[in-house]
Length: 147
Image (cartoon, rainbow, N blue to C red; front, side, top):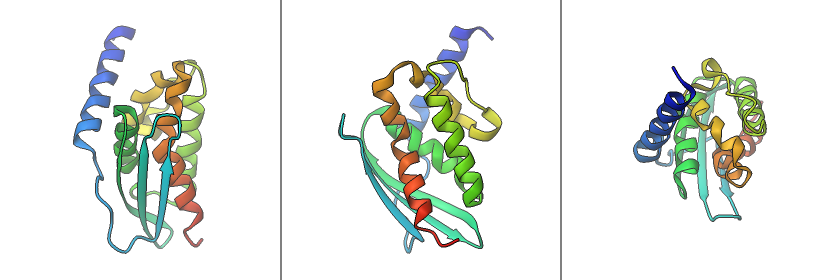
């Protein structure tokens, strides 16, 4: 597959997630809640986490913003359900590393799933905060869960 074909595929994945919004909607009785705002562009996310026995059972979210922030939240909700807090942290660290790579890191599809479609964002520094918004809300939410 050519690099252009891969970019087109990633664009399709991003558009699909920004429209379908997996995990959209807040959870009743969440274990943790976090709210994030991207002050540079106005994107906003509220993230609910439900956890039990050391595992993230589900993630729900609401918010508004650009296609990148909405797609990233959707992708995150698919990735973290069923993971431990440590596994979530590993995914978060890997996602952040991919976005800070300036195009040198295409991501780990096995670990990040559809979120590797956001690897191209690393070439546009102003958009990195859009892609990171839900992930930083997750990071904050994880600190609110008892070990």
